[in-house]
Amino acid sequence: MVLAQLGGTISRALQQMSNATIIDEKVLNDCLNEITRALLQSDVQFNLVRDMQKNIKKIVNLDDLAAGHNKRKIIQQAIFNELCKILDPGKPSFTPKKGKTSVIMFVGLQGSGKTTTCTKYAFYHQKKGWKPALVCADTFRAGAFDQLKQNATKAKIPFYGRFSCIPLFVEIDLSCNSYTESDPVRIAVEGVERFKKENCDLIIVDTSGRHKQEAALFEEIVKFLKQRSIGQAAFDQAQAFKQSVAVGAVIITKMDGHAKGGGALSARAREVEFEQWGRIWSWEKVLVSCISSVASDYGDVHKDDSHNQVAATKSPVIFIGTGEHMDEFEVFDVKPFVSRLLGMGDWSGFMDKIQEVVPMDQQPELLQKLSEGNFTLRIMYEQFQNILKMGPIGQVFSMLPGFSQELMPKGREKESQAKIKRYMTMMDSMTNEGKVGQFQSQAHERISNHANS
Ligand SMILES: Nc1nc2c(ncn2[C@@H]2O[C@H](COP(=O)(O)OP(=O)(O)OP(=O)(O)O)[C@@H](O)[C@H]2O)c(=O)[nH]1
Image (tube, rainbow, N blue to C red):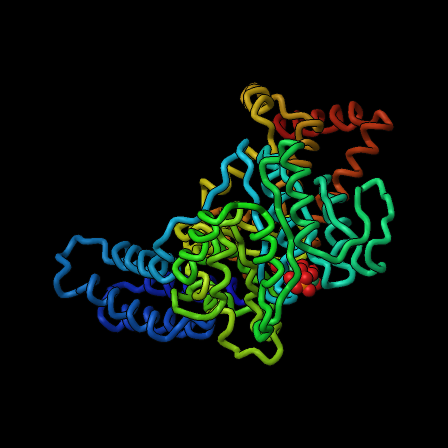
């Protein structure tokens, strides 16, 4: 993962600077040059990197810093702040409110990862106590409905959609309320209405991917907007949004693999096409655009395209996709992200994860047991379970200071996860065979022998 390499290189440059006996101009320049090289290799725009270097040199004027100043700390802080500046769109992101219905429509180019990300987004919120639902309005790609259905079923999230591969209007009554229909607008409207009645607070609509060059870009979604009888006033208002307001938020997908994600994340506002997004925006509030950080996904589209797309939306990045699995999905928040990138950890994210997996009502009980020295095999088993529930362990560990993603490539991460599962199975069979007592008394015996010797 290029981002892991970027983080590793920057941390190493900082470490080398910290190890120097005296911080002089040469040490500072070496450190900045190393960071600059790493950022450019990750596709961050040249101008941004050049400005960053200039700003840091302005802030860290070694001649002016009196003796006694902690130069290392000042340089580190300046680098941290400048990296945050590069990634910060300077605009708050859209945040849906729990308990209040929000309809979120996912848009993006073909293959950017919309269907996968819809489920990740729903799953993430479901774990936090939301009531999400998925609507598949992608009737263009055969298999899109099946893909969403499969993912939704796995995550136990209600879904609505229709098969597009079977001839029009042949209605097949399935238990999942899905039958054939090729009009995505109708499907989306029906799905949204249905889940509103069921009091879902996060209704996520997956749409079909569009190729950048298509003339009828998002035409069906605009139709959808009209059909929603929002009234002329609202429609006019929506027109007024044209170009000035685009999508509510952006999710960058495929930040794993060979993506040079730095560029996609740091893209700045620029006028580009997709003007229709402005109109779509006011329909039921929010559009989230999925943008792949892998520029080659778009075939003949220019390499720089992922930058342009983020820029086009002028919207903040809210999540990043880091793999094909449901839990390979991370909140994107500039400061914690930079902090993790530099191996400085993200304690608030870590605590958030812990609270997600250890139910609030069980936390005092667990603490009580631990404080009494009452650590049993059962507790250990439950904690292993919790670790697995927290998501990919590389993702979790990267929230701890000193951890570098480089240290845990995906293969090794899976290996560790598999080992934990093996230990759990062993513990399970020990419990079932009543061997726990035997094991514990053996362990006690060994401990007391050790203490006596
Ligand atoms: N490595 C990686 N693969 C991803 C990620 N997100 C999606 N994918 C993969 O990208 C491919 C396309 O994803 P889809 O979700 O089908 O994309 P889509 O935008 O819905 O596609 P269309 O509906 O055809 O436009 C699939 O093979 C996904 O598994 C990610 O974050 N990392």
